[in-house]
Length: 106
Image 1 (cartoon, rainbow, N blue to C red):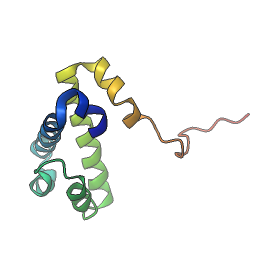
Image 2: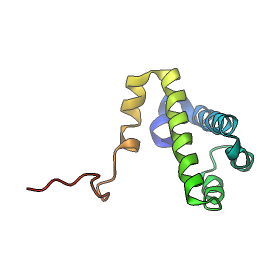
Image 3: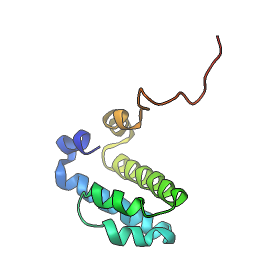
Image 4: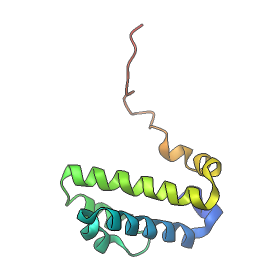
């Protein structure tokens, strides 16, 4: 996301969206407040990862989903849904190594 967005909104814009997304997640989900306190500075994904690995799997997945959704929604309010979708298409597309969610028989 950083690589896709920095040319459009700048590094400071990406960091601001990230921090705002974390803040909103913690505000809307009180159980995530401790995560916010640990990762509120800058675009430090290593700090985010170190906090998430300390959570149980359910909380880590929940926070990740809420954070990405919030980030996407904030970006959409700034640059519109069409441009957001185009810029982040590669982020949302499944990896080629992922197993298809539904296999079809020949």
